[in-house]
Length: 132
Image (tube, rainbow, N blue to C red):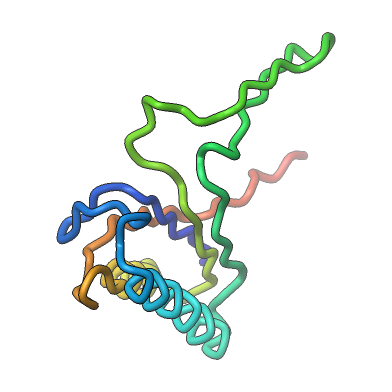
């Protein structure tokens, strides 16, 4: 079973300080935690992919009618209170294992090394229906 674990940068359950305001050593510890989690999942054969994403001010929204030139709107998007920061795609035996990984990711360290309680969205990756 494949799942996408979606990480957003928003207010977390146990931390309301935005990441750019953390001390440099706390940011480094957080990133080290993310790398270590990826290495652990890879060693277990569960990691399909993991990526961090650029900040919203580097994002674009594209809309097209399929006939004329696409309309491209650049960020930043001031109405955005949270943004997609990255994701893991895991291939695991059960939804319970996906939840276990998400819980581990949620406890990433924040300021002072305390677990921040990030909200990690867990979504199963569905396959397309067979078309006859």
